[in-house]
Length: 124
Image (cartoon, rainbow, N blue to C red; front, side):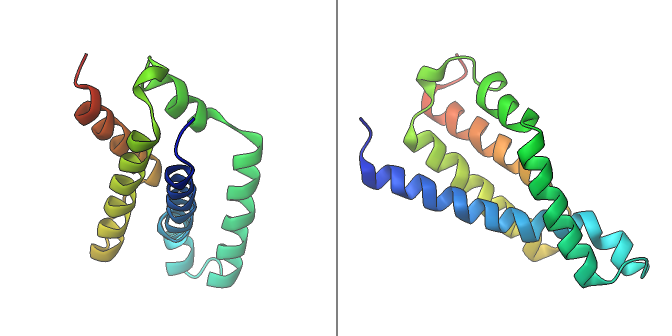
């Protein structure tokens, strides 16, 4: 059984990643609509939040890809690999947000997980 403090760290990092994903990717999704004044910022943010929530509840394609198609052996995944992947994705999202570079949080998460697994288990 994994150490409960490490599980708590993973849960906190996952929630932090979700929060950062919200302000990071929402800006990418609504920037054109708001900058052209087609939609007011408040309406765009609420609409994006509602539709992102509905999308997460209806479709699990990204979760299935991350959970099953990137790493073929579940033995390679542990709490430390997940923690490292989340930290890498969080740092990348904050860096790209800070410099104003559009970037996908899903791609950051996949890259963080691949990097953590490569360091942990190698290319085999």
